[in-house]
Length: 209
Image 1 (cartoon, rainbow, N blue to C red):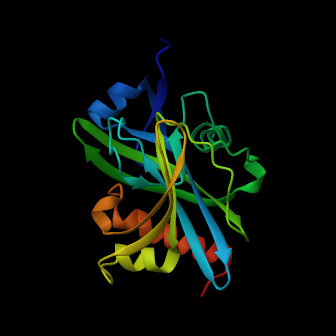
Image 2 (spheres, rainbow, N blue to C red):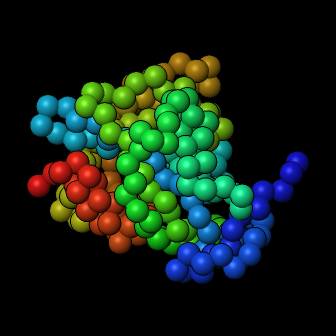
Image 3 (cartoon, helix red, strand yellow):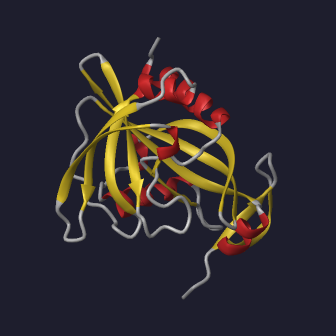
């Protein structure tokens, strides 16, 4: 199997060289990732989509996370990251359909993984519900959505529970309705600074008050 090389960066984004994905996570090097958040407008509300990570994932299994995301390899640019949307969700989207929300750094850890990312963050917005998901089951076990403002309140500690609705995919591919009220522990623990910048940029992009 060919070894995946990632760019090793400093905190300002300057490239220092390359390393394997395993080394990057073991030593906690800064590296580039692609994040695509999907939203829809329904009536007077904005909904944010989250993927349910597979229980087989080494890091953050069975937690809710960014709609689609992945690492950018050493020879890739952010434009190449759109492949993650098709691979994970089965949606064919052109890079030109995405709105850039800028670069948002975040750090985290899970087990022996130290994650320091400079995330190139993008928004895919629709005026109606997004459908036609065909999930990569090794990576994604389901898809849910929640009211954007209510999720922001959850992150800020202004509410304890968030209502999510969507589906979970069974082993045989059957989609089963998933509706629940979850607390913040159900989500991959991105830093609050990441979320605050994300909310700010989404509001600016969608011209929300």
